Length: 395
Image 1: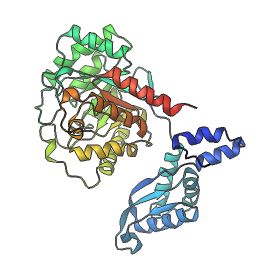
Image 2: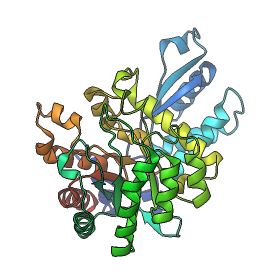
Image 3: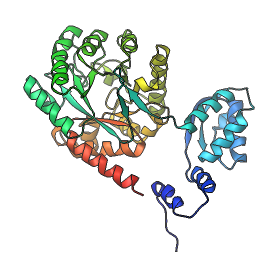
Image 4: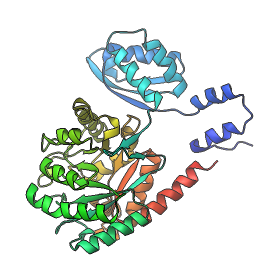
């Protein structure tokens, strides 16, 4: 009798197979193929990697232009187990040419699977042993989901308390709508909306972790002074060049999101060749900009920007390929709650009927290995992801 084994069960099955401890570690490294895309590889390097992967039992897909040397650089796809990649790294250590040394270092970093965490300015640590849930509190008159708009302070405090009770780790406070076509507001007006809310929530719930949704450095300064713990910048620090310096000055973690243009005009720039690769490359470049001012991986969170300068097929591809952002040492946030992609994927359901679709995106975040979701409906999403985690983690 032959019984298929789900990839998620391989480790547990090996543990019950009465293997020697050393053999168990070896078998685990051979248990799964990890496809890796490597961008802009020099053609000679691509051909060398192809031969080395074949020699250790793996594979490397290279384009025809690399085989014929008709192009100088190319993208390649590695198909190997962790064990095969370890062998490849050992071989590449001896090859300090064609950029192979840098590739070896990056691959070694991937194999090491660095611990992912976020360290707040006050020393508290957000760990990601399980998916964390961020609750949305909009202090705006025009957010796309009307039920998420809040105006009265007592109502906001009640909502915050309910979200925390339901399992939210972080509360995301926003004072400007970023829906497609939305007009911007001044930092002064934005601060007037969010600062009293941050102050009140911190007074009522001192241990709450607050994220401030802004791309204005002046608002960020005011919000941090009021008690904000994280800056959530939809422009990844490009709209206001002082933003990264503000975050670094205070030791405040920052969420970097992918977007083109502004919310007002972003849907006019939605052409991509490979949306997953382009978004991943952009965010890693922005993370490098953060590192240059002293914001390391424990101060940076990556967000692919679902719905921002992207059409429904792009958004679906990003969620399908969310793993591309994981494994780089940075926490990954998926923010798809009740967005247009859900309505269109489900045949045109209105925003009020997109809860089930939102829960599905949160479950995809679990499968992809992401670390956080940003949602309007905390209780339902927390229950769904905790149940999925329980199923996946049982031994």
